[in-house]
Image (cartoon, rainbow, N blue to C red; front, side, top):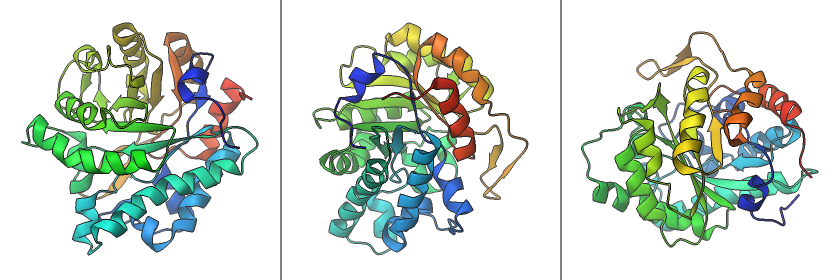
Length: 302
């Protein structure tokens, strides 16, 4: 169902459930994601698989879908031989596919256009480190065209997500300024610091006075790191908090695979809500089953 109210207004009243990891759902559907474009390759090669993956999360109870544009960049598409006009169309398609999947559900579904970090384009694990050796101005120049294209596609919100570095967060916020679409800012963290090592309180402070930012938080991190991060985000910014951790397994960038045991527990959601979380979901290796567990804990909004 198409939403009729702005996402920010709904978050002021309660908690909404996000989707889970898109790549793991696509893999469960039999998709090969070994390409450097990862799930973004399917925007050109098999978009129906992306729509089906989104739909699986709608059936699980998600009311916010994050698009398949995390690793979709003009530079990444160009390396594959895709021209700029076609790449713009593929970025817009990521919003269209999520919108189509959400429209088929029984409850309102909002669409968040994913804007991943610079390191995601490199496909070498550097989105988990940050500190690319680029200035804030250079990062802003990289992000601005994609942000503009996604904003023009009409999402309900931009998801500036998996940001490892406060410098890149500053660049992303500058790139999104004036685009006409609200946004959330979500860091990838280790403990109480960004992946680049900055204190979370300082990192969240960048968004504190920015009215375009409707939520701040963390994603693509250990579930055990979330509890304190939610508290810090709420204390520093006074904004609703967004949280969607990984399964708890560890990504091996060199081997391009996951190792370890999953520790994601939908039962944590009550604690997150008490601390200020208003958007809750999962990231890598969190699938529809776990999202259904979150939805059952939160309860549907109508």
